[in-house]
Image: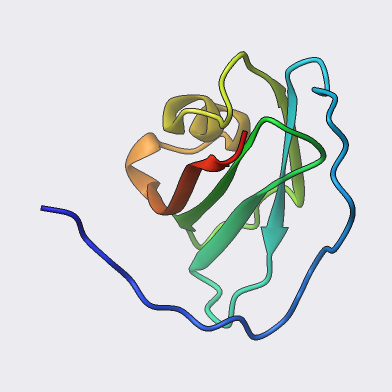
Length: 104
């Protein structure tokens, strides 16, 4: 069974032309401000192809990093690596959105 979700775009955070070059496996995630102090959202910055749209939610009252940069051979960072970079337990992460086939 596939879960589906509906969402509405309220604000465009980044808009740029994508290059066709890979950024040597360096992936960046940026923090999105949330209305709740206990919820934080991170999105993967897409600079070129191939790439993946990836958004994660972090349930934590602690202030977290604004940007995270990591090297990986994957199109997105695994939850355990992201939790390690944020210095939190992996159980505090929740995948919100992942699309891996659109930007190949």
